[in-house]
Length: 230
Ligand SMILES: NC(=O)c1ccc[n+]([C@@H]2O[C@H](COP(=O)([O-])OP(=O)(O)OC[C@H]3O[C@@H](n4cnc5c(N)ncnc54)[C@H](OP(=O)(O)O)[C@@H]3O)[C@@H](O)[C@H]2O)c1
Image 1 (tube, protein in one colour):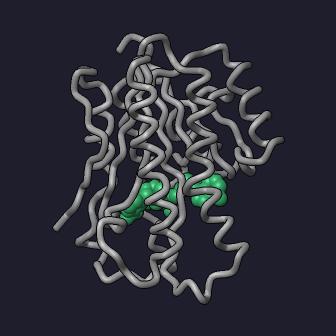
Image 2 (cartoon, helix red, strand yellow):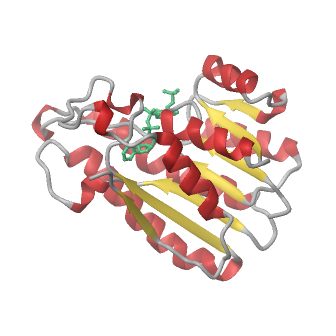
């Protein structure tokens, strides 16, 4: 891959930061979008990124947030063969205990932002090559109580990613939908989980897999990849 620009949303999280680290190790130029200026600045320092490589936006799904993010991308005068969406939130709660606001907020980050991120990164994609990475969830392959909201958001993402894959393939696009089981990140802070942290997957292993895969020959075409530890 000659153009080694990578656009990341969610690099301030456990999986996203591990992917950013692996991309930097493999000589990619990372550009990060996040909602926390403080965390983005820490990553800028850690990965020695130029200041224009980070962009802070409270949300990319509001009209103003979308336009500002687009303006930042335009100002860079760059194209991106790689785009990674690693932002999301979890919830383990009965539907009867979820408020309308909580439902909408989680759908917004887990599903709506995936669409907004696609639109933005597609507009600034590299010629003839576009690798788009999403994180679904292994939890949607079985039905669990207390997973209605998270499960619905990830099932929606899955259908979006699969359909999108068919749409963009003729133009050199490829969508990667990873469906991990439990990964050792801050994702489980405050969430009940039956798997102890030592049995969860290391985000660095997932990052290596993701970054190696996206450089594979485009004849290799995987719509979805479950990654389970046991
Ligand atoms: N960890 C797992 O076991 C697991 C399993 C299956 C799928 N996944 C999926 O993998 C992705 C990454 O998860 P992770 O484990 O890295 O989680 P994490 O460590 O909790 O990181 C979550 C990331 O999402 C961002 N984010 C959350 N809500 C946001 C909002 N409203 N607006 C903007 N950014 C927001 C966070 O930003 P801040 O840093 O600013 O909070 C952070 O960058 C998620 O989509 C998750 O559903 C994770």
